[in-house]
Image 1 (cartoon, rainbow, N blue to C red):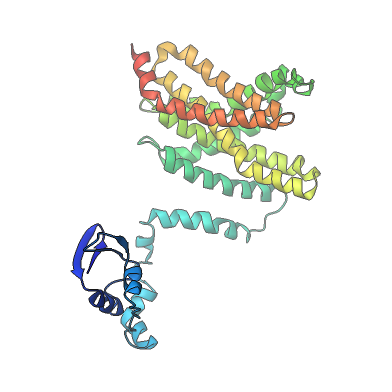
Image 2: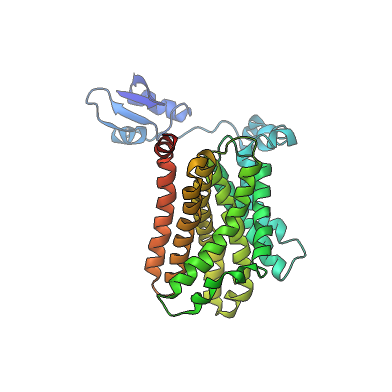
Length: 341
C-alpha cells in the first residue's frame, strides 16, 4: 500500500495496482512522491511500482488532432492575454523583452563609429539599471528621476572631462613610478571622477521636496556610477582597447561594459550613502561630505593603481568596495541612531 504526497498533503493509502491505474489515467505521475504505508520507506511512485513489476503507460486521450482540438486555440495563441493592456501589466515580461530584444533592434539602426559604441554601452547600462532598480529602489525612487540622474551625470562628465579635469594638479602623478603613482590615482583620477558622479546627487538632494533616505541616495549613486561607466567605457573602447590585439581588445571591451561600470556604480553608491546621511544630519555635514569624497576616491584610486602592477590587489580592493557598501547599508539604522544623539 502506498501513500501519495502532493503539495505537502498525503493521499491514500492505495494499492499498487490502483496507483498504476491512476498513472495510466494521468491522475498520478510516476515522479509523484510516495511512501510505503507499512514501512514508511520514501521514494517516488515509479520506484515502488517497478519493485512490484508494474510498468504503467499513460493512455493518450484521443488522436493528435483530437488533443489539439481539446486544448483549444486560445491555449496555443492566447490572443486575449497578448492584448496591449495586459502585456504592460506584466512587468517581468516587459523587463525580459527589453533585456532580450533591445540589442536586436539596435542592430537595425544605421549607427556606426563612436555612436555604435555608445548605443551598445547604453544597452548594458540599461540592464545594470534594471538590476539596481529591482535590488535597491526605495519608496522615494521614481523612473523620471532615475533617467534624469543618469543623463545629468553624463552631461556633467562630458563637461568636466572636456578639459576641466586637467585643472587637477595631481593628474601628473599618474605618470610617476609606482607607488608614487598612487597619489595621482587617488587625488587626481579618483577624486575628480567621484566628484563628477556626485554633482548630480547633490543637485537631486537640494531640489528634493522631502528628506532623501541614504538608501535612496545609494540607488541614485549607483545610477550615476553606471552613467559614468558608459562614458569611460566608450572612451576606452574607441581610443585604448582598439590598439590591442583582437583577443585582448575583446576581453577589455566586455570588461568595460560589465564589471568596470559596476565598480563605478559601487563607488558612487558609497558616496551617495554619505551624501544621504549628510542631508539627514546637517550638524555632521562637513565630516559626512568629506567621507563621501575621500572613501570612494581612495578605493577608486587604489584599484586603478594596482590594476596594472598587482591585479590581485586591485581585485581585493574591488571586493572590499562591495563589502563596504553592503556594510554601510546593513549598519544604516545604527549609524542614524548615533547621529541623532
